[in-house]
Each structure stands twice: as C-alpha cells, then as structure tokens.
Image 1: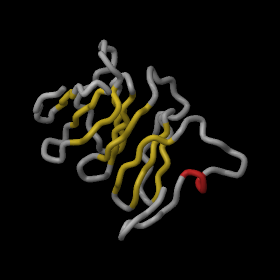
Image 2: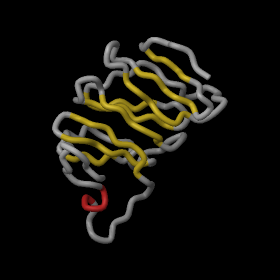
Image 3: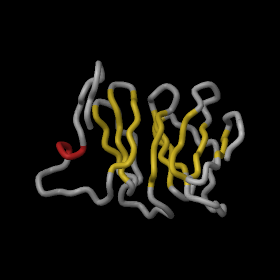
Amino acid sequence: MFAFGDAQFLGSVPGALPPGVQLNRPVNGVTAAVGGYRMVAADGGIFSFGAPFYGSMGGKFLAGPVVGMASSPDGLGYWLVGSDGGIFCYGDAQFHGSMSGLSLAAPIVAMTPDSVTGGYWLEGADGGVFAFDAPYYGSR
C-alpha cells in the first residue's frame, strides 16, 4: 500500500504477515472504511488497517476467486465479489442478489456500490453490468 497526498498510511500486507508467512493468493482489492482501509486477497482473506474486521472467506471453498471488494455506504461493512458473481456480506453490508450459479458470458471482475440505494453493480470482463437494487443504465 502506498499513500499519496493527504491519505494516511496505516500499513500493508507484507508488514502484517508474521515472519516466514506468505500469502496464499495475491491481494487484488482495497476499499476505504471508517477509520482506515481493508484489502482482500483472491482466496477471500481480509486484511484490515485501522478499520474493523468483520470476517472473511479465507480458508473456505470458493467457486471462483475473489476479484474485488466494496465498502457499504456508511463504511461499516463490506462486500466481496467472486469471479462467478458470488457475493459475500460482512458487517452491515446487505445482500441484494448475485450471479452465482448462473451462466456468465465472461467472469465478473469488479463491483461498485450505489450510495443512494445501498445496492450494487457487478461488472463483467465483457462489459456486462448487473444491477442489484441499483439503477440499470445499460451495458456493452
């Protein structure tokens, strides 16, 4: 993690691991939170820096790797999203639906919360957008 401008550096994964311990999967997501930030690894492991930890998918079976995360609108929770469209909710993050178990033309690569409705959008590698309790504006 690198902090620029007025952002505060609170730590990063290499410094959080005990000596000799390595990550099982790479870190591929970060999100701001109340008091700091959180990072997620592809195996669903969460690393919290200055922010409350509410749980993780680390050590659990996943149908696809976790590809991103997003903070709930008030920052007191978070969602993880898998490449298969699975959604995992922690803290006050509410479940609004997922693409898990459905046939996708391309894997999910990211998610974005809607601060107005509290829902979210999932983004596919092919430009597909899936709206869950968030307005749908179209997709590629």
